[in-house]
Image 1 (cartoon, one colour):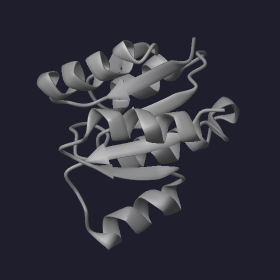
Image 2 (cartoon, rainbow, N blue to C red):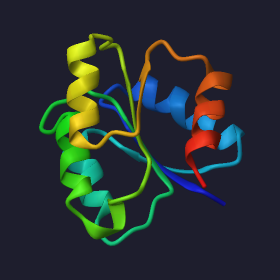
Image 3 (tube, rainbow, N blue to C red):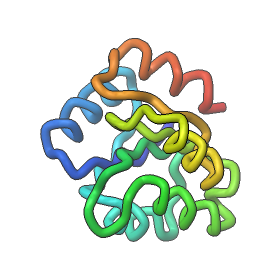
Length: 120
């Protein structure tokens, strides 16, 4: 079973994302912000990281940058799921190493479709 690290500071959004992923058969570990996610990723393998952008302590782009510094996350797909949709933000995400950018509110079927494409 593929494991996904789902990161969002909104409890309701985390619940929605987690429910969607678990319903599709994924094992999900939740984190409340980028720093929590970075700590939970220490010494663990995830097949994908799905993170919000705007969070306290460490945002999604910062988390992406820090994860890419670790050998086990060099090629792990990292998707940023956020309300941010500006090209400037998307470019910053790509520059940090994000695999893709999805805008909230999300369509559960589309989210699963994108995840299936990027997890090998």
